[in-house]
Image (cartoon, rainbow, N blue to C red; front, side, top):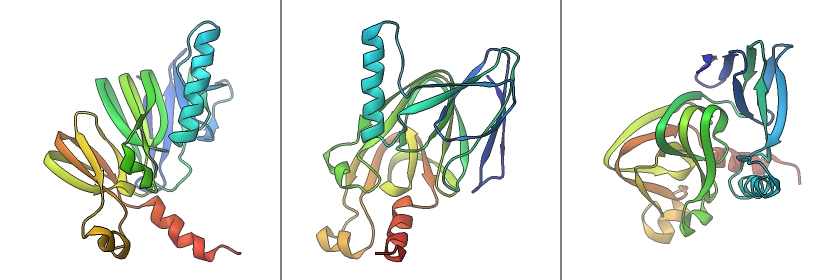
Length: 232
């Protein structure tokens, strides 16, 4: 596992990763801030790759799905060096960076939360259900599994809570959660009037036991605040 430091938390996170010789870190396209001169960057499809034509075709289709429905970039960047070196990575929005170690478990993340990963981490989109189509934050989660390290980002600070029974969170504030939790996406309450008049979007009601990562700001609210100020 590479040594890393997360600087300038909680809202202007910068990830510094020290790579050992031959070690590889996979990062979201556009996330690189700086790197050592001898560290090489290889651009690849944002999907697992297998040998042969059909393996590459499958990787292309999965990358396209993740781009269209899950909000992820079509390509990712692989950083490595035979001599080792360092890489700086940062998210597009002002927010925190959280380090997560996967040891065979599965976690789901909201679209755009992925920043980087190392090790044997598999990622694929998962549909959040028909009601999630109405959510401004998107209808798909990013499912991650395997053994390795992941760095995820948020809009604003990240609060980790533990669900032991049930927990209700606005969909726009969800960063990620353990796949062991069951969830239902629904209206916030008060019927149609409550949904339209409260200013709240859809909520996600979790059931079971597991951790949930919550961001302190809502990107949908930022978009709604900016739209009236745009010319035309």
